[in-house]
Image (cartoon, rainbow, N blue to C red; front, side, top):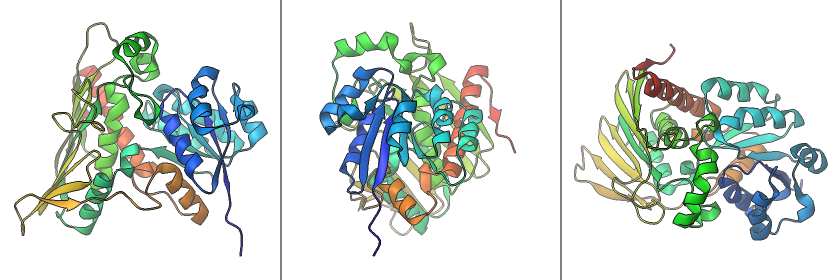
Length: 360
């Protein structure tokens, strides 16, 4: 019997603090080995080195040295949103499979460039952390089973207190730390793809596309706030018009509490309405609430923690690579690309203050 393969994984570019979470998943996988990490700023790798016990001789400040010396099978990328295309193009020639932390890209043009840059036979995966939440997976199972009929509308409210209030593993930061980091953080730089719309809108648009079976809207209308002293938004409201109805997505940096500690009001998550019922599935709950024509009174349905291979993105990617199966769901390119189309239209709509049609 052939011995199961051990996958060699490298983490490159630590702009987004989610790199620590993704490397932790790799460290915990029985058939994965972290062979290298790389960032131009060595201090940003220190937390991963300390928490995960990564040897210092496996850390590099030059990504090329990292790739050439460690020869990974999979590269995890966590650059600033505006740099996703640049970094995929840098890494793709080395032939590794690539996982990019959300969002897909800063624009649809950039997303398509990322797809084209990947060599034949190499997988590109866009990780949307909400795909691994039990409540959101249970909602999809119910939708797919026909429990609420044909989906007509999806509402999403997504956000948190702000991207600088927490680090890897959701470690809390102080108000003083946030104030100190804010002026220099890429999250608050327009040229780097900052702002709540680009940070969070893709969650709603991509999972909405998943729930609606890959359907695309006809047009998109968006508005954003203009906080004093900032060059990016902290609040956006987006409406997508489909042939069958309207869906709404709202992003917010500045919720009263973070949803993984105490759900704010309004709650972060989704409400899905269909021809035969409704589902509400909120972030981090272990249940969803369902209405149907046969049982119109809202009732809870258990949403236990997902089982393998849907517990985390590293586990799922390696599962698909082992079996040479295509990715499915929000992390797949067809679903993520439609999500990006909606984000692109929302950005243009907010800038022009007009409704933007999607290309036919």
